[in-house]
Length: 205
Image 1 (cartoon, rainbow, N blue to C red):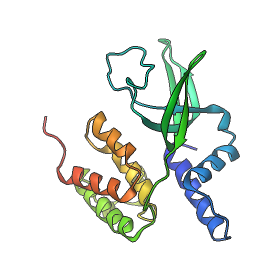
Image 2 (cartoon, rainbow, N blue to C red):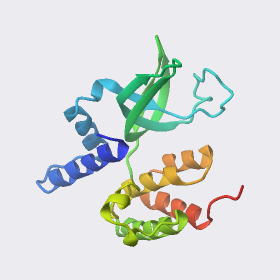
Image 3 (cartoon, helix red, strand yellow):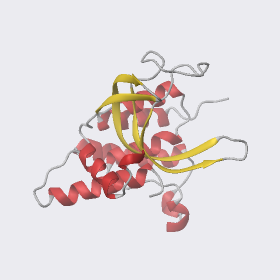
Image 4 (cartoon, rainbow, N blue to C red):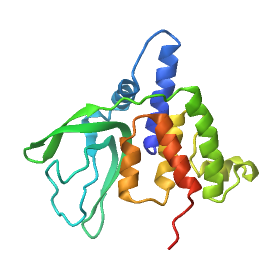
């Protein structure tokens, strides 16, 4: 598994396959099952952003944003300078209920279910987002062969939530707007915001 897009796509495929057999799973449940299948449940971490970068040890609800991502650690390496480099695969949005201080900082969390992810409006907006991204990133997907096209890593419009989460990191926006997107559980609203941000263009330096 290379990154969060793989885990999320696998979870959606699993959910669709089970739904076709009259087995219903929520999105977070399907992602949890994928993590278990891959043997990653004992390596999960909660990834959240801190509100103020000047804090060296943010450990209160006031110093952290309330919504983050449950992720699996897929690789970790200690660099020659002693810095620990960790590669993670995001699994699901989650909200912090309370912090737990023990040997290390932990948290009680609650899953955040997405809304309108498979609606007709989401599908229509997905096409608009994909078109806008070509202008924003100055790339024409139709002129690219499959190899170079794949490196952009954009999924099809069949998974609006995945498309939104793949495009969002490429936007030239600050942490607060990025956090706003993360906290938006309504997929239609998330796509609309992303579309507006791309139409506004890249910020001038």
